[in-house]
Length: 120
Length: 107
Image (cartoon, rainbow over all chains, first blue to last red; front, side, top):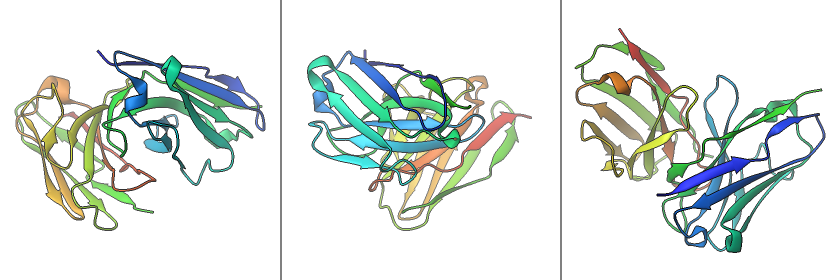
């Protein structure tokens, strides 16, 4: 059974950094592309970033480009999201999601989410 | 970037009703359209991918159709566990945007 478990969320001041992790189990992470999707309180879903199975290709939403970095350690079946220069509007539940296949944007399995709160 | 819209934004229905939700893309996305269900406090779940393919384990009362820019999610006979928010999302090319959601609640 595919399972994804996010960690690393918390309360952080504007301008500071945070690193999210997503540990996968029940499948071989390197076979599949992965993404981060966020949801601000009471709002809809927003795709944030994606990475290919090998890690060689990365993609970002304009809202986080230049501030967030997605990466992966396939030897540890773990996905990361380094978030720098955080803004109040980055406050959200962050989900990691497995992509159906080595590339693409169909999210077939999701973690339970980790809450990031950016506030002074 | 491709923009996704959904209608209606919310609807009230009864158990046993047939429910239809519409999604529109700002440009043609072929059949690169997915549907997700989200219940309060929970992660979204994939229902339909490729516009009309049912994800593993999803009940057959859910179906999807459409191509190009116009798509539909249909729930054939609404069940109590189907009251939730439904999102469409394109997987044509990054950024993979979502629609604003359709909340289905009990009449």
